[in-house]
Picture 1 (cartoon, rainbow, N blue to C red):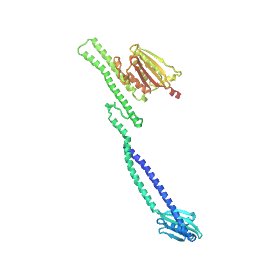
Picture 2 (picture 1 turned 30 degrees about the horizontal axis):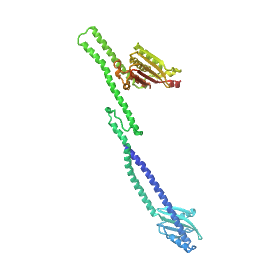
Picture 3 (picture 1 turned 180 degrees about the vertical axis):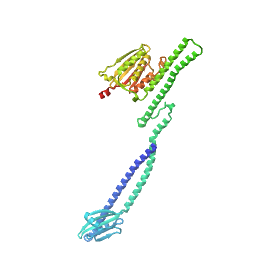
Picture 4 (picture 1 turned 90 degrees about the vertical axis):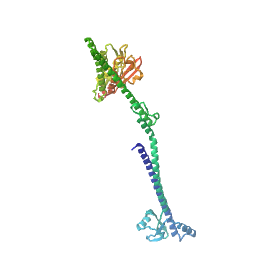
Length: 463
């Protein structure tokens, strides 16, 4: 069932229930009031008849005349009967069925006043004491007029309920349609967005209600999708370029070498050049393999408690082995009193790869001095490695692409590299529930911060 139909039915159901309860309350209390009021009228009629019958021999002429006038003001379908102490009927007025038994008369004598019904006839029984003894008076009548009005009220309430239900259904349908109009608009706008139109955004996202919040959420999702598509496009184009360059070079060198006989020295040069290009392809393949391995489920990676500073020193040593002319300074911002605060829970090989990539990038893009500064900082719940260089820097618009594999900024394309280091480091940090941040300014240098959660709390809890 559609939301519009469900809202209409719920709205109509709730309103109908209220109307039914309201109608039942009105009918019930009207019926009770009618019944009690008519009992009072019958009771008054019983007293009038008693005075007319028993006061006739003692009352003056004026009182007799008033009693007589009241006596002839009968009720509809009235029946009045008077019984003496021997249960003998001594007076009757009116025609109608009135079942009287000795049990009933004894009950009236015992309770002095009783009210009851026989079908639609209402009956009041009272006792009346006179100089001749105690008598039982049974007065009854049918409230035909009020019963007819009550029946009319029932019809009016039922018709009104059905009519109101129709009005509520129509109003609920219109209300649901208007209430869901913004959602319908959002759906219509979302249906128009395709892979080639990710730049489009939903309107009505400036309000503060739930629908505006929904539109804002959709727009944020579209921003992420657009960025992901851009990153994918950049990855494909950059990867194609990086893979095509060494292959084209190899093919060109080999084709030229095969055009005519060469000297052994020329063949050796061609083979050496081809070997260098093959090594580049191997590095690219290894980088892609490492990215794939770093993207697997973190639960499948073996973790151990490691000293963060020791991994940093190991990374420094590996970079110096690869680049003997590099100058790397490692500095503690503040050495903690408790060395357990330097312990992290991670995979040594992967964390070493991440640190080596970041430090090597700092050396690579600092052509002036081949130097980088590495700083270890201890936070409240984490430990950081801050790597800073004084190189070329990265343009602001290129910073959002630095974690895309094979992406390289325009100002560093003349420097050897494949654009794999930072994306690989980011994947590794994510596997370890850490983060990596890059801040850079053109011609001033770049600062990369690796952050990992401390294992101090876990170790303390286990100990």
